[in-house]
Image (tube, rainbow, N blue to C red; front, side, top):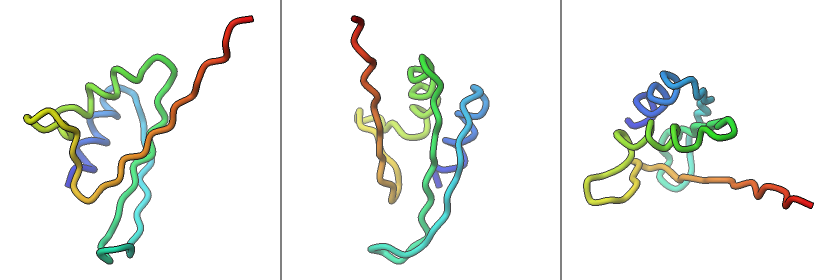
Length: 79
């Protein structure tokens, strides 16, 4: 139920995503993965776009039946 609002909030800010649908797994339920390509320097905007949909009042990020995965890239050190 969080997929559409999250994807729309990102798209309005020019941060586009790709939705992948599958089924199965532990609960044999439909699954959705939202792949987000965040341009350099736009991470704060992406986080703020997702906050109304995926941040609960108790101060934790939440999503229904979703595994959140993040990848970080360490910048090369200046020579």
